[in-house]
Image (tube, rainbow, N blue to C red; front, top):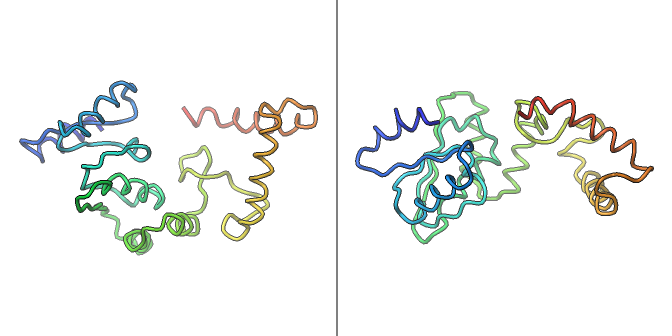
Length: 196
């Protein structure tokens, strides 16, 4: 990201105050960059997807997402939500060199809806849930019993039951939850290396 910032963004935008934001910055550094951008001390912010959620800069009006085909539609929907929060007109520009028909359809779908639920459903139907810890689209683990698109009612019931169980026994310490606790521990232990 730093190389892109130095070799591409800054030379393409001479005379502009360009900031850099990425996940390896310390929290105080991230906050300082965001405050400078919000205050108008930076004209452009080059960022990784760390900008995706929780950033509110009303004067941000243009977002450019390079290699847009690499992102799920839900992530792109979140990204485009970072602009247009103020009174000024805004736009999100998606750039992709990928000429695949499926990529064009996915990006076109996003360009024709603002409905986040419709975007998430379309993304799930076309890309699947992804790997929970792997390098595929981040999502949910492969389900052995349910289909995320067709079995939403069952999945909602299962989610409510899981919430109730965790509310009653957050550490799964009760004897009747021992097998579940062991399985959760096994899942996370087997994938801990992937997370690092």
